[in-house]
View 1 (spheres, helix red, strand yellow):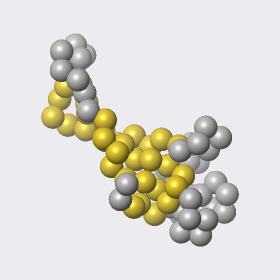
View 2 (spheres, helix red, strand yellow):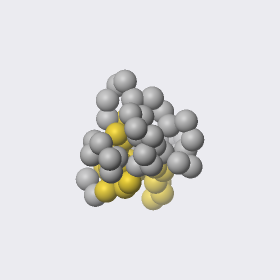
View 3 (cartoon, helix red, strand yellow):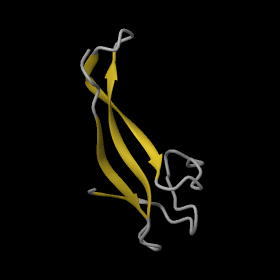
View 4 (cartoon, one colour):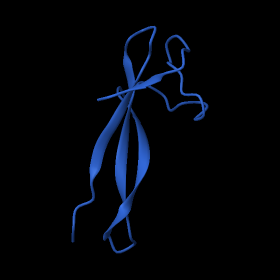
Length: 74
């Protein structure tokens, strides 16, 4: 069985606090039998265990100051 890929796509950074709050990964999809597919899904993952999931996925904000996060290269 082939291994699925998980790649770091970007980091989501606060422009005010300058902290990286979330990592954005690309996770390879798979068939029910585990065979990898050529397509990927995005997975948003907090950098620290005390960071909650975003309240509004359409506007991901800094949990400390409320500023909308910006996507940056890893």
